Image (cartoon, rainbow, N blue to C red; front, top):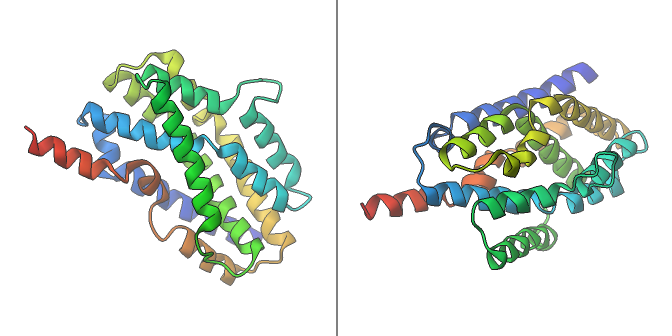
Length: 238
């Protein structure tokens, strides 16, 4: 039963990642077909998505079952740069933004937009009836991002280096989330299984929450929401 549930989750993650990698917007970025404005919009969206990751992990730590809490705590400390490696991940995103030419005002706007996403998460009507269901949905989305980054982060970093001419030292965030972090992604799946067992969430309820959480592609939604409009405007101005 546990193996079937893990396989169900892995299949959902794999489908999300494949659809993202096959999307025309990912292809444009990777193949150098995007405009500078599109690359910069992608960088903005990526930073806004991940700058407040410590706060999201803090929420997950608060609702984590005892078996999953140590790993989520480790991930939280790692994000904050309070582990043995001592590299603050939000700072790496600011390094990326600086290399892309974003000045202090624009970086402040990035931080404000990232905080606004947290506020929206708290003020929007809940799609779930209990905190345990909300916690599971957030955990599924976070671990799906880990799954995706462990498989595609190096390709994204390479695209920004080659086609946006960003220096390697500005792309360290992608190095920390690349294929070398597949173990981290697998530990995320362990946390999901432990969460399901602790809160006694059955397969039927899991499938419902998976359907709600992944009813659209979370990566396209977070990273590429405004790229069609930017690409369209660039085409009209030719």
